[in-house]
Length: 149
Image (cartoon, rainbow, N blue to C red; front, side, top):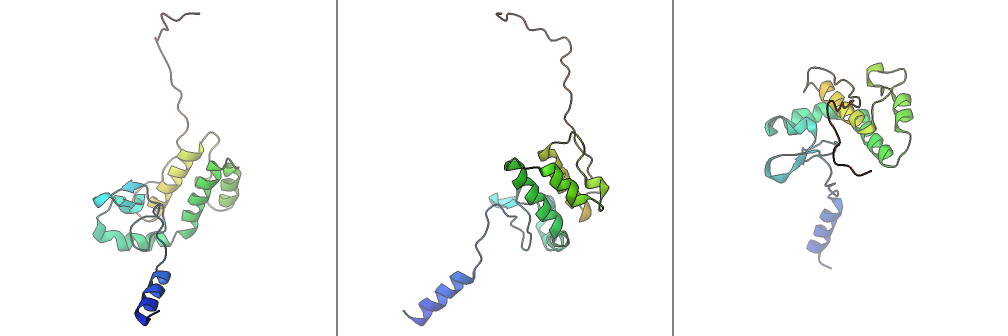
């Protein structure tokens, strides 16, 4: 085996495998959730700012590594039908009461609220996101006609 071939093989080993679900912004550890220019995917923090600001956003996001890991863990727990609510309550106990899941808040809206919390903490949105509870749908004046009993 030639030295050039060995050098090329070492380079390939040194390049980390890219996770296709990860944000394309350099240094960002968040999951990609939004399609941006050229069919690339970015996280919510990078998707809504010009690409020339991505480095600064990545730096701010990296300060919240624990919150990013929490959001990923929540997603995995909900998919595995584990007690995500108990985990979240333990995580935020004696820390930030605002981030606790509320009584009827479902898993996916809660995860989205935590993504919004990340955006708030890095300064991309002004207000902290409020919990989104299931909505009551009223069917006023609707009649079922022609149904066979």
